[in-house]
Length: 238
Length: 264
Image 1 (cartoon, rainbow over the protein chains, first blue to last red):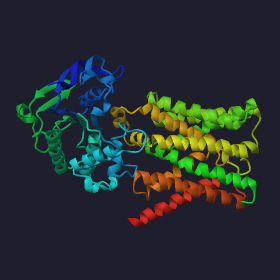
Image 2: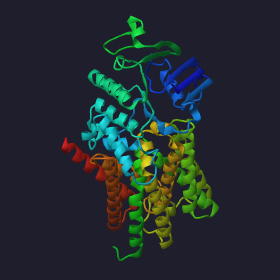
Image 3: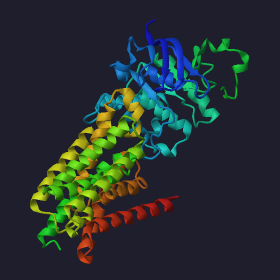
Image 4: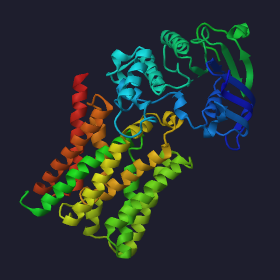
């Protein structure tokens, strides 16, 4: 299976600061659903930023679909949900307007065309938000907002879906619903999913692979092989 | 009032400013850079002073200084040499200090200077109106063409960067348009008050708008209303137009805040 993401002996530090990541080797095949977890400050968001090409490794190489991540050209292949996104908090954006912004890189100039509208409608349908498309985002629950952001990430039909702390500010029931939604999207679309979070209870049942990061990769395997004390049904793994 | 040519010119120029300022300001507010107009305005003050000192039209030196100031803020921000508010503070204070030193050196601390700082309905000429119309309409066309990309960056800068949008270029475009707006508006509203016209109508519109697009539309209506009311009051009460326009904008904000409170 071709690789979607590849880390080869990667070290990283911000400026002259201490090492954030050391000796990271990681290979994610196309179509995998992988949870990347670890304590806050353990380096998982940095690992994600390296994977997206937003940071340059101090040593080693990071590849996206076989190309150097920093210069990877087909950026619309990536659907990204940023950590603690502030979308719609200040602006009275509707759900549809947020999802349409997911087409901006494909259609930055001029009016949206029929296929753009179809892609937006499809993304809204997939996350079950079509009936709420005209609602202001700020009037929705945290779980519904996350669904809208996932629809935005899906709007350009990406091959790789990257979610950074998607359960922040979302109650446990909505977290479970989010996990089930991602599982369904993975099954239906065959999209590669990188789920990065300090806890992984919401997706523990669904992911094929769990990667724990604490400056280096300290566990990489099926969640079922994780030492028992790390499991926590209340979703408070740290 | 409209029998007088200078009032017709002021209203025509004011209408362009009333549309342009909130349209650009919408993107500043979304990026939490509401005060960038103030920072650029203070650099423009240094530009006015430089114009007096060099014997060049202050309009053009102010516009040039505003563009340089906007570029400086964006450069500091983009290169993470300073946080957004720190970048603004550096440019803001440097601008006002430079302006004071230059204006003193030029010996131009007079009433004419005040017309640049706080606006004047008597100063708009026919050739000014042509420049305001060309630059203003040009800026609006740029905004309309890049609207979706600019909204995507304003909503989610990291997401836009990952998707491959040229985020630094788009941020630079917004800063340059803010500088251009200040240059275009200085005759009517004044460089020290124009930033308010970029922000107040947008904040007011957000209280009653139902979507991003409606926010932009309602902001423009409020901007236009503030300018037209402000100029009228300015004419009849013999007050500086910049102050009356901004106070009209504040009244609109208070009205929409009341509407919002009553809805709850």
